[in-house]
Amino acid sequence: MLKTYEKWHKLKFFTNARLLRPKHFKAGEVWWCMVGENIGYEIDGKGDEFLRPVLIIKKFSSGAFFGLPFTSKQKNQKPYYYIIPEAYELGPILFSQGRTYDSVRLKRYKTTIGRRLLSDIRLQYAKYLELL
Image (tube, rainbow, N blue to C red):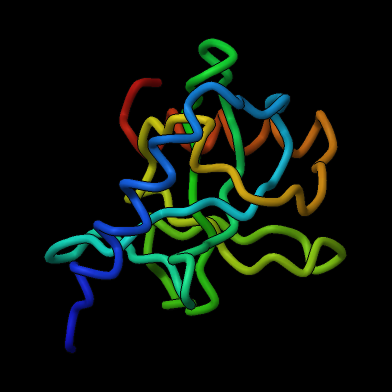
């Protein structure tokens, strides 16, 4: 697969210049996030802005959060896939790709999931990481 690092780095440079304009966001929200063009098994964003829906599971500050990206692909019986109820039309969450993001990467709000579902995702993620 051909990677377009030059295009991503140029976009990343201009995105970084927006640091003075943080987004207002909270845990449980799903945003289109500029995930980027990454290496190896790391998940990439799609399209011209390298976007992917990301669930905010923990807000650290007005400028940082821990997020879990969604995917359109699903592999049965894989412990790193968490299936969201169909009502949200989001696809599975990739537990293996969770990471910290800067809020400047947030592009557009998509939806908010319920508190109960967010609690379940956090619990299942902790089990996946063998923290419980």
